[in-house]
Length: 77
Image (tube, rainbow, N blue to C red; front, side, top):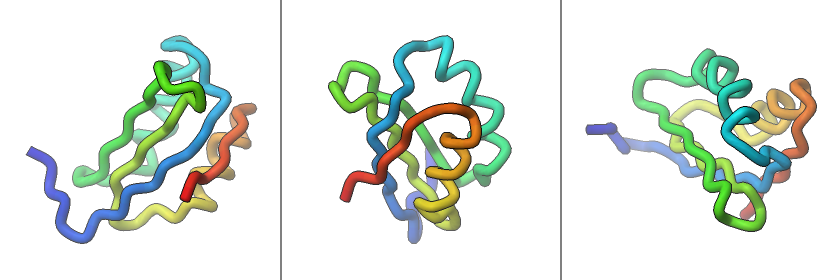
């Protein structure tokens, strides 16, 4: 069970299109996550949503991380 104590939910529109893209990003995302963080993609949504539950990551970090690996990423508020 994930601890949701003080977690923030960050939601992003992305250019991630398929499981191959997710597999490419998985080790990168896991590197910046703590044990209480959680992330997932919803590729069935037209915006290819990345959802992150975290207590330490800032949106700018995620934007930079995905951008550095060639993916478009925009925070949804």
